[in-house]
Structures are given as structure tokens and as C-alpha cells.
Amino acid sequence: MKTFDAIIVGAGQAGPSLAGRFAGAGMTVALIERKFVGGTCVNAGCMPTKTLVASARTAHVIRRGADYGIHTNGGLLTDMAAVEKRAATVINNARNSLTTWLTSTDGISLIRGHARFESEKTIRVGDEMLTAPRIFLNVGARPAIPAFPGLSDIEYLTSTSIIHLTALPRHLAIIGGGYIGLEFAQMYRRFGTEVSIIEHGPHLAPREDDDICQAIGDVLSAEGIAIHTNAQDIRLSKRGENIRISTANGNPEVEASHLLIATGRRPNTDDLGLENAGVALDGKGYIVVDDHLSTNVDGIWALGDCNGHGAFTHTSYNDFEIVAANLLDGEDRKLSERIPAYALYIDPPLGRVGMTEKEARAKGRSVSTSTMPMSRVGRAVEKGETQGLMKVVADVETGQILGAAILGVEGDEAIHGFIDAMHARTPYPVLKWAVPIHPTVSELIPTLLGGLKSS
Ligand SMILES: Cc1cc2nc3c(=O)[nH]c(=O)nc-3n(C[C@H](O)[C@H](O)[C@H](O)COP(=O)(O)OP(=O)(O)OC[C@H]3O[C@@H](n4cnc5c(N)ncnc54)[C@H](O)[C@@H]3O)c2cc1C
Ligand SMILES: NC(=O)c1ccc[n+]([C@@H]2O[C@H](COP(=O)([O-])OP(=O)(O)OC[C@H]3O[C@@H](n4cnc5c(N)ncnc54)[C@H](O)[C@@H]3O)[C@@H](O)[C@H]2O)c1
Image 1: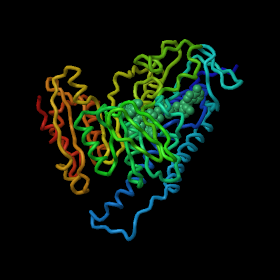
Image 2: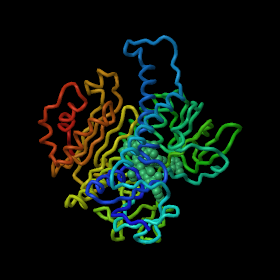
Image 3: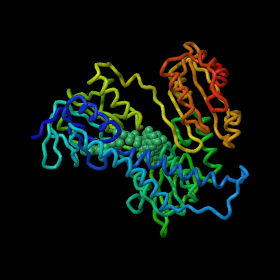
Image 4: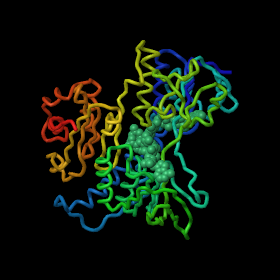
């Protein structure tokens, strides 16, 4: 049995930083990883996808060159092998530098293998038994694949395997119109593939307000992506070399050369031996945690996607910050203090923070909203990218901003004006007097706030 001050399972977005802080405080840490250090973000998530999105945007800009008075001689060719290689390089560089840091930091033992609880304080990795008074779970999630009829007869892609394609599909069908589905849909359309999205809800990006969903649909259909919503009872079958996707409610059948299933993710908690430690899970398999990220078992914490309180790199990293601040810096940081924020990396991107209008109304707040089309934003006009809209939701009684969305050029950056104001709890009338820089997207935020009215 090897004894450490702390054991961390999973080297995703929280584990390595936590290991570094503990080691810096003079503690011995075992960091256990069964696959690649860096977890989903580095190896199969944010980093490769945003690298691929950048290649796709380059193709799009070249295609639009004539709109800007710039002409290219000859056609456009996507060299998918080179596109894939660029993403692989980004992955490998990030993974290697993290590995170098972890293996060269005194106090951290990077242990390769699958970890499983034997008891509350004991973890097995292969033949090795490890124990520590503090155990931190950062095991992440993986694609969830629904049991569609016919699934076993066909080959399909997930967000993990599609990253490694080196040849362009003729026709990519995507089941699921959420983050993964939409980012890959636009990316592959821009690479030159025919793309069909099949979503069982009434809208794409169904968590968003209807006006935002509608605008997202408009952006994607304008690029020639076929969108099939309300697709119930999806069935899969093989037709020659192709995959046929049929639905019950009159949507046309889609026959595609490739199929990506992007219907959500499930936590990696089913093979961790949690029953041997008595750690409680919720109905969806997420580890139940309190406001300080402690599980129901003393001395065991859960961070990142596996606790179901955020499914993003920044939320996993913030979980690390909360635990480190509370255990090492004598602070009292809480999960409930975090304001949800995220971006959907279609182009133009959607930056989002806080509540949607429908969430705010469901909570019974005295809601006031203001929207503005991106066609009124000078910077967007100058860039020739006027799709989308800005929207803010505020509480008219308290003057607090409840949420905001910027679907538009630079929306993922400009939304930080709202993120910071909401974090500082600045009432919106104060922001109306800020003097932003011209010409930016953010300069329209005071005007947007000026349009707030109750309805
Ligand atoms: C295609 C895609 C694109 C994304 N894009 C974005 C984006 O643009 N922005 C954003 O914020 N988020 C994005 N995400 C989400 C983001 O990647 C995840 O939320 C984030 O990586 C979660 O981090 P984590 O630390 O919770 O877990 P992970 O990064 O998943 O790490 C968990 C680690 O634990 C290891 N592990 C699991 N079980 C065991 C075990 N029993 N023993 C040992 N090791 C184990 C795994 O191998 C893994 O390395 C994207 C996700 C996907 C799939
Ligand atoms: N930009 C980002 O930050 C980013 C990018 C990609 C992924 N992610 C993370 O990865 C997670 C998973 O992404 P995702 O797109 O797989 O999940 P998601 O929950 O965002 O979207 C899944 C979509 O599939 C639909 N769906 C579910 N079951 C279906 C079925 N049986 N038939 C048809 N449609 C069905 C849902 O209605 C939803 O629209 C996200 O929650 C997010 O946290 C983040």
C-alpha cells in the first residue's frame, strides 16, 4: 500500500492544477490518469475543435473574398489530412507540455491506469493499492449514445472519433443540435461536405430563448445546412454504403455517407467502484456534491463534469479554484456563487451568461428585455458580418442584469462585459454611463441597456 497526502483521479481540467497547488504546499499527491493527461478539453474537446473551427473559418473567408473585393484564382480545396494534422499538433503540444510539467514537479506522482475504489480511503490501479486521507474525483464524461433502433448495424462517429478524420465525408448527418452538433455541422459544411442536422426538439440549441434559436437556425441554413427538427423515433439502417436515418413524424429520410451522434455526454462514474466507498450518485450518474464540492463521504470531493454542475472547461477549472481556496487559503468559496457562462463556437459565435428570458420569467422575476440586431453594430457592418443579435435580460425592480446573449461577430469576447458586470453585481443603470471604445461590438452595450423595458 502506498500512502499519499492526496489522491486525484483524472488529469482533466481540475486535477493537474489541484495537484500543483498541493505539491506547492509541500504535500505528496498521486494523480491517476487512464488515458491522456489534459482530459477532454485538450485531447477531444475545446482545443482540437476550436483549431478545426479556425480552418473552417479560413475556407469561409476565402469563399467570401469577392464580397470584400479580394479575388482568388482557381477554386478552393480542403486538404483534410492537413487540417487534421494541424489539430493533432495542437493536441500533442498541449498534452506534452502538461505531461512535462506534471512529471517534473516535486511531490506529484503521475500514475497511469484505471482507478477504482476498494474502500472509502483505498484506490486500486492495476496491482497497486493507494491510500490518502483526501481523495478528489475529476473523472469527466464521455459521449452518451442512445439505443437508436438499427444502431448495431451501422458505423457512427462521436465527437472523439470525428476529430481524427483525414478525408472529407460526402454527406455528414448529425443527430443532436446542441453544442457539438452545431459546431461540427458548420465546420464540415465549410470544409465542403453536405450536412444534415437531425434534432428531436422543436429548435436547435434548445436551452436558448426562441429568438436566439431562430437566429442560429438562420445562420446555419444560410450556409446550406439541412435542418430537421421535431425528429422523433429516429431509426437507423444501412443502404448500400450509406446510412439511412428515418423519423416517425414526416421529416424526410436522410441518407448520408457518415453519421455523427451528438446527443449529450454521460459521466465516467459507472466504473469507478463508487459503491465500495459509499459515494452517492444522482439519477443521471453524476456525483452528488454540496456547495463546497464535498461528496456525502468525508474526505472525498468531486470536481468538473462528473458532478453535473457545469460541463465546460472553465467550470471544471473553477471547481479546482473553489476547492484549493477553501482547503489551502482559508477561504469560503461556494459553487452557488458561480454565474453560468459559455460560448457556442459557431461563426458568428454565441456568447452567453446567466439566465435566458424564459428562465427568468419561469422564476417569477420582474423581467425587462432589450434586443438589438447585429446589423446596427458599426463594427459588424464594417467587417461584413451582420448576422445575429444581442439581447439582455434584467430585473426592473432590482436593476440587476439577469442574463445576456450576444450572437454575433466577437460575441464570445464582448459577452465578458456582461460577465464582469454581473459578477460585480453592478446595476445596469450604472453601465449605461460607461464610455466604450469605438468601433467595437461592446460599444453597443450601453445602447442595448438603454432599451430595457418591462413587458
Ligand atoms: C467536442 C467538444 C468540444 C468542447 N468544447 C468546449 C469549449 O469550447 N469550451 C468549453 O468550455 N468546454 C468545451 N467542451 C467541454 C470540456 O471539454 C469539458 O467540460 C472539460 O474538458 C471537462 O473537464 P473535466 O476536468 O471535468 O474532465 P475531463 O477533461 O473529461 O477529464 C477527466 C479525465 O479523467 C480520466 N478518467 C476517467 N475515469 C478515470 C478512472 N477511473 N481512472 C483514471 N482516470 C480516469 C479521463 O481519462 C480524463 O482524462 C467540449 C467538449 C467536447 C466533447
Ligand atoms: N462551446 C462549448 O463550450 C462546447 C462545445 C462542445 C461541447 N461542449 C460540452 O459538451 C457537452 C455535450 O455536447 P452535446 O452537443 O453532445 O450535448 P447537448 O446537450 O448540448 O446537445 C444535445 C442535443 O441533442 C438533442 N438530442 C438528445 N437526444 C436526442 C435524440 N435521441 N434524438 C435527437 N436529438 C437528441 C438534444 O435535444 C440537444 O439539442 C455540452 O453540454 C457542453 O457542455 C461545449
